[in-house]
Amino acid sequence: MSPSAVVLFAVFALLCAARSFGHLYQDEALTEDDRGENGVKLWALLVAGSSGYENYRHQADVCHAYHVLRNHGIPDNRIVVMMYDDIAYARNNPTPGVIVNHVNGSNLYPGVVKDYTGNLVTPSNFLDVLQGRRPPGGGTGKVIASGPRDHVFVYFSDHGAPGMIAFPSDVLYARNLSNVITSMHENGQFGKMVIYLEACESGSMFDGGLLPDNVSVYATTAANPYESSYACYWDPVREAYLGDVYSVNWLEDSDKENLRWETLIDQFKIVRAETNTSHVMEYGDLSIGAMTVSQFQGRKEAEPIVLPSAPMDAVDSRDVPVAILENKIEAATDLDTKRVLLGELKNVLNNRVFVQEKVREMALLLRYGSTEEANILLTVKQPLTDFDCYEEAVENFSKKCFALSENPYALSHLQFFVNACKEFDVGHARLMFREEVGVQDAVVAVALMEVSMQSSALVENVDALHTGFAKDPEEEYRNQ
Image (cartoon, rainbow, N blue to C red):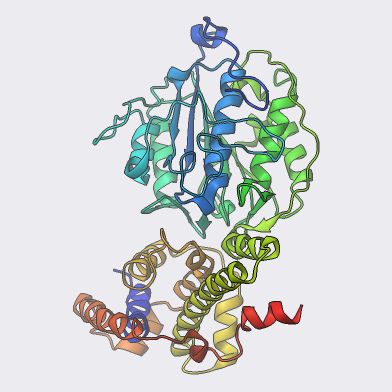
């Protein structure tokens, strides 16, 4: 355990206690992708890493991606889909069995072969499937069985944070993904790989050399290492955001373009220009950008699909739960419904205040009560370099404070741990904990943390923790 992590653990101990828009994949006849072109087969792994109806957009993105690939000739036996599959028939869904990715879009749910659903959507299963290993515990058993000349396309849509992407009950760290990709390259498990990544701070999964330029992998991300990605297409009928800005931009581009003529760098430039809510980035072997999109998303010529324009209604992905409630409140026609929704909104905001305040108190402790220095620790954007400290700190924070898979908003505060791990080196650790600090101290810290969490559970009025931090939402709406 790194000394920096021990410093943070001690702080925890004190505080935390069909058809794609108009046609289903076009036929089941043998295509050139079934046979392979010049011995090169195309494989794809599509992952929606979230669960819950408020995350509707992630599974909608993946369903859309599935039809893009099928429409362009990639056979189902070389497409692996991982999605929780709790949206199409969710109680909240007013159109059971229907998932759309655009306000004017067709049903994308029919025809999607879901290989791993529910609790099988995990980081370990994702890495197993990517490496051609059949995961234990169920599913179709389909894997990416690519060879040394084959092309692999990976698309992931969900929440993220510095150096990680989220799954329904766990997270995947950047180093783990990087190590697997490097190992696959060394073992000749693919010829070329392209990764499209939709998540907040998604650039941090590849930045700083995490994705080398010599392993034949090209990646684009929805955001740089320090910013959120954005949801879009509010649907007042389904009361959900139907897509993500970066994702719908590449998906709708692939729907309408001739992929045999469009290069990956062409698509990157189009998506970057149309995604005006965050900075779309590219990483890895940039020479792969000169290859055509068809060499990864399917070689078959498909009928172009062009949808009428619709308002993006873009919102920071981490603010989606708040935006959903605000939209519902605005649409409500009776006072009783508004009152219930206002109560729900207040609870969401209070929970956010609670998370913010706990992280702020950690910063104050590390900065010996200096508000000015604590604010710097909370707001500066340091690059992630001390992975050991950061991953240990995040694991402890998730287990003892706020389960990250269940509290996506808490992900927005993990930059604090990046900053703290970078600043508190061995010298700082010795200063705070004496030279003999070690594993036993960390064990004691964990035990004390559990007691602290029991005390935290007794807090009833979050506003008292942070007076004036968040206004009463009901009062705000009355004053509008």
